[in-house]
Length: 481
Length: 93
Image 1 (spheres, rainbow over the protein chains, first blue to last red):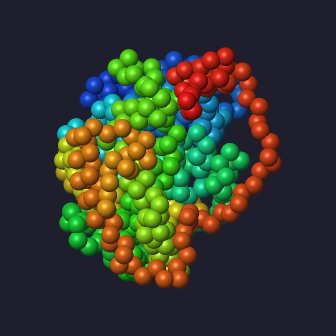
Image 2: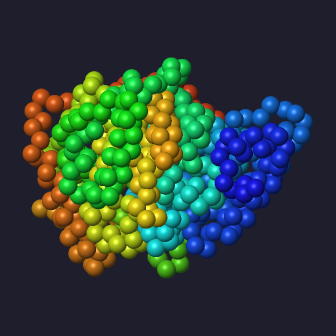
Image 3: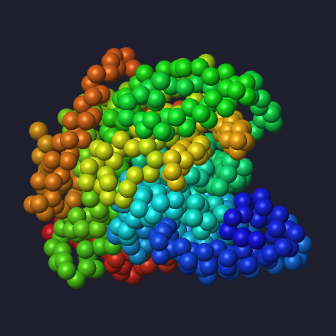
């Protein structure tokens, strides 16, 4: 039996039946990481000591017949922007190259309580800024389906680690598509929860009105299991919300109303992607779902709106990396002499931030600066209202909206790295969802050659349970010949 | 129009001469791209700061005392410390 292929449910069953121990399971994954990492570079830090110590404790509990948590003994990986106490947390940046997390993020506390085993921290675009993981200061991750291609980004390491069977599940963060687009490129399931559904305490902030933490998994059921563990209100994140009580009703395809926004099936989409997404939707229609065309008329403005709001918030959030409190500093770098405080700031931030964070910090500083605030930031926030209203109107007519996750499958390493706008366009179908704060899941609906194609399922605020049910149906229908 | 040196200074980012040119060009392209928003009529539209409508989440105004271990871990991350405090260069001459 190849233990790396197990789902959460299967692994849990195996542990319960004593077919293998948590230590054995962990060792199998550490060996897999050892074997695959030369090609993949999905991990920035492997926490083998921590993982084995955790596994030992779970084994003791199992041996003593004690009650174990929902994810007990299940090996996972965490995007390197979420704090895990005592472990390095770099955000893919030179500026945090030696930063050791002094506490656990709320999601980590919850996973620890549920008994999950931490295998390590995964690679990402610097400060979650990018769509390919090529912006990592520590080198790109490769796509396990085709090593010449990117895994997507910014949570590329987390998606690739699940796809390459280097962990059972992982966590990522999504500000404009950073969970769904890599899930699509690597052929795994990824959820961007409703804004506020998961606490962000201990997640390094990028754009605070957009950021969310979410899970990657091999299938829909696993994704739901992880989400159920990490969701809920947290006093330490004032934007987090009480998640409404789960309804137990069983969805029937014949009661399901699906919206297809015509703006998402227009120019720029790879015809093969469109074909696979439409085939999946047809299967739902054949099973009795009602499919209707809808309009999200402000879609064409969403990306421009995002590229004002996000950098503005980035410029404020990244002000904390100043070479004084933590992180790499010009003070301790022998190459620099620092005369005064301003000089420390200029040299620290000038040298240890990569090109993309600097680009976005400057853009945001400009759009927030005196005389430009109304024309850029305020205008973008008003357009954001229009984008949100588009979704609200659509959800008066339909239960879920189905679209492609990305206009293309995974692109080649190096293909878009020199053209920021071209790179930004790969998030065109995911960005509007963050602006509206609604949840969306990406699930593989087929392949072009070796390259997976993602189907995006969007629901109204806090409708994750419905999304999981629809995603489960799709998974089932797509499995049939 | 766009003075890259002024913005870099506001953002506390040191730039080399080569970077000045590169960023001027790239930022101009992005700003041209976002010009598109002007087409949208936003008269009488309220701005959205975040999408789920939460407002004024309050908590009791009390500080949480950190233990010595956490304090030590936080200080260990600082480039320069003195007597248990983070050291900062003089702000005034």
